[in-house]
Length: 154
Length: 416
Image (tube, rainbow over all chains, first blue to last red; front, top):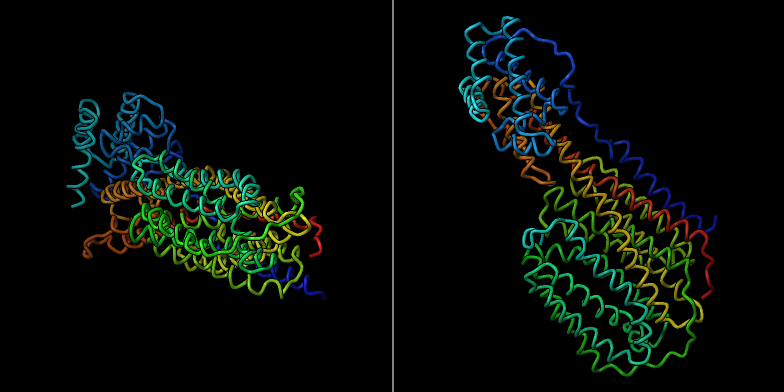
């Protein structure tokens, strides 16, 4: 075998060994994290305590609003941080702020009704939450939910 | 530089593109000009390079940096072209002059990012240019003492397209290795520029070591070039398939790219200069090809990797929120953790964020272990996502190397 063939074959062998090894170790593969379809049917798990009930309401609100706006639940949760976050979200997704607010309120109302039907919350709590959903300005509504979440988790 | 001038990575890429574009355009005219007065034009080139380095280092607006870079390239074109004739005068042998000239070119191109990274870390980006200014004047002392080089009476023949085209495509591939790897290390994996600079010195070291032994191992220039492009393609494919984040994973791919660099550039430059044509003119064509290749590489790769980074950021946010929400962290705590993670990801702006502090908690919490587990799992996923964002550009670089290999395979070697 000529020296030229050995040199080229050696280069091919080294390169192939590297590529095969790295590919076998999982290189270049990044499976996107599965993100649930917000419009898909939710399986309601029985809740234990106020914390889990509140979590389900918040997530169901996000699901409903995300489905309405054609975005993911994760994107919408990011928008729920503050009024400024919601503004950024609205501009990024080419919807008006009013449209985004309306979707969130409708999502919250549906989530409250679902929770009440399942017996996760009582009538008084449902009424209080309906009042929040219908009347409070969105920033205040988000702040109340945030504070409630903080109070429950501590 | 991005923070200093409030510009994005695409604009900063023009600091490299402008220099290489002007150098590619000026190399052949400069080669024609230096044939008669190599010493004085080399002196003029050094002074222009030094002065324009000062302009870059002291620039207070971004366009002035770009203008300085263009002037630097004009000066460099004269210096590089004249250097071939001056080396001939020093060594008294054209073939030895070509060898030294080529090796100096490889070393310069490969060491640039390494030295740049270290100087940036120690003293800021301006220091790169401010250091260049006096360093560029040092050869002037040697030039005064040099005898006037002999005039080479060789005909001006047409450039050899195959080795020059292979050099162009190979340089496009190498721009992926040199430019993208530094960005991956510094911007992607948040390594200090000085450490990143040290890491990428592996390539020039491999290039120099292999370059010394390449000719005895494979005397044929076309064979050396072919083997070199196979190694460069393999190394770049390896960088495109990094299994994990961490500079140690780049070592073997870098050694392959460096070895390929040692094989190809010298072989192809010698091949382009072979024959009876004027060496300086053909040398000018090789410089034009190499720097045009860097421009092509940067113009193709920059939009690809900036797009991949933007995609990666969106995916990272989705992953961050989804992983936290679907975890078994205490229900209401997970919402605040999810938002803390998303804030961290927003602030990272394409870099690899450390999201683990968002999961730090009181160890007495019942979900403390779950918080640590989810934090580690998310960090691992983010590291993989940032690394994968660079996969496509590196793989495109490998394709450039394979295209160069195809050109080399149809090249007929000229007898020395």
